[in-house]
Picture 1 (tube, rainbow over the protein chains, first blue to last red):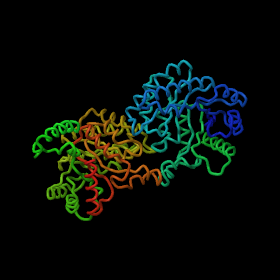
Picture 2: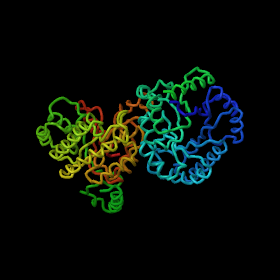
Picture 3: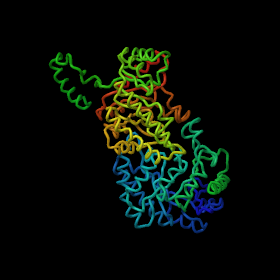
Picture 4: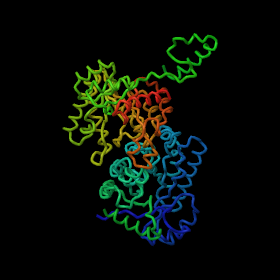
Length: 269
Length: 302
């Protein structure tokens, strides 16, 4: 069965000095789309998009949204305003969703506070998301929050809005669990996929963060199981690579083509 | 006494003391300038006691090191345990289940789950005989084969079957946070306990096991009165990051990243009284046991 998935690439990992150069490089490497951050020069993205024939997979608002749980109300308000900008950027680019980090738990921000604050703040932008027809997609990242897939599903459902969904990062889930389980539990809540590798062996033998320093298909993701779970949820959409690591000494342009080939193999597994 | 109540009382006592120092003589608490005395007793987990000899020999070493009690394993020779307990004067506050890792209540095979349940029941009976108030239970293990939701449903179903016995015996089933890839959120952990709707189910809180992905003082405040037992364990995020995940545990008490004053303050705030039980390496020799007891003493005073 041919999967109806599109190949995306995380903007920051694409070589090039300008937006146009990056889009051209992504196109040349064989991708279908790019995932840019919010707050870029809004008029340049559609130009690069149309010149290359690429699409915009989604818009990331990661750095800004990490402050959604900040103890200071003005910082949270700024994060909310940034989400609005992200939504408008996405609408302008024809992207279906914005990647949102659900704040984070820290020594200063408790798990319970993060839960309450992030829901409270994100609820403020749900009307705009609904109006623009752009989804807000929470991503599982290493923010010490929403560590359980059952809780993640509940967190989304409590918004009671079809505009709130999930951007599932495969590699980020390996540390504490099994991505294929997350995919089945989140199911139709999954709006977008991030493709990333992780090695439990490196995590255990070299250090926690070294788990990311591994080539695609050489870590501990069971890609056939992941793809089978993706099929079962009926997911069709973007599979966007977020490279967490680059082998030393490899030319960035050559690397982009390598990643595109790895993604082909992952999506066919 | 609740810490806040004590501080209030302590401040008053100090004011009185300024006029009449003898007013404090014989008082159970020290002046407010000294750390509040906590009503916590010092325990050690049986499995971490590596000194050679019989149950009695080990209990003597534990007693001599300065502990007040020991958390036994289930399925031991109960008569021998009771004789050693009475000979040494140690208390047994808690019993740790023997089979929860090998026969988890989340196992796909119902027969294995039934065996795990029977083992939990035996642990409850052992606890009753020893005068222990609580049984340490690892409720489930999430793995590649057992999904998070399966673990949740199966373990709740099995534990529910043991609640009548726990209630009858007056022993708590206390769920421990361990590295089982399950109940990773403190909010979820509290919900999991509450869904049993039974005072017989509580939590056995392990401080060190949390550090890999969270902050123990946050868990303590969220779990609050659900906490029946407390495990003292250290963890180093630095070692985890530089040497490997499991290396984080290879650090002595007070030399890792647990913020013990914050943990103790959180325990005070929830009104926890009871046992602080070390689960920590180093207990394979008498001097190692003494070192553990001394470090535990410092933690309890922090």
